[in-house]
Image 1: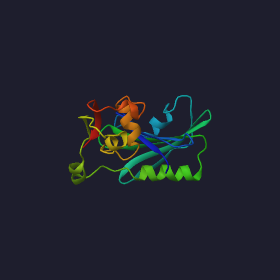
Image 2 (image 1 turned 90 degrees about the horizontal axis):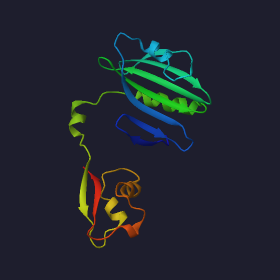
Image 3 (image 1 turned 30 degrees about the vertical axis):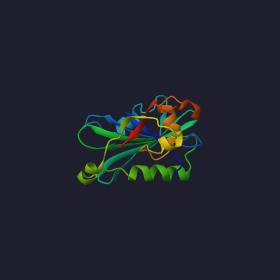
Amino acid sequence: DGFGLENTPRAVVGIDSAGDIIRFDGITLPRETPLADHLTRGTVRGGTVGPVSEVQINGFQVAIADISAGEWVFRVALIRARGNDVYRFIMAVKEMTPERSATFEEAIRSFRFITPAEAALARPLRVAVVEVKRGDTIASLSGRMALSDNKQERFMVLNGLTGASDLRPGMQVKLIVE
């Protein structure tokens, strides 16, 4: 729904053009701690927690609440997984519209563990160092990267390039590949 995603070591974060944010991450929470209790105890510092709803989604126990803090509204869903593992979806918006609420609902309803067959198909990305050949361009080299979007921009950042004139035959550049 218009979110540009960034995968960091600790979370997947999406930001849209209006500045709305959605975050998916994980925390450790003792199994005996009710999800609703955790939501009401300082999930957002200085925030006012609204009513907590507790539901089942795809077989998982889920607690959801809106938390107001300043000009922001945070909709937080905690999903109890295995053992002490709890996953969080957090949406931060200036106004919780019906459209944003539907986006959040769609996100939390998508939560599931991947199957062993899906896990077997997953391939990690790696960095390859290649030598620039005569005729190579930022477009041709970045086109070889195993990324779905912003290939040229990411190629330039990865290699510290500011423009096409920085690319010279014989130099070594990094590519993200499978």
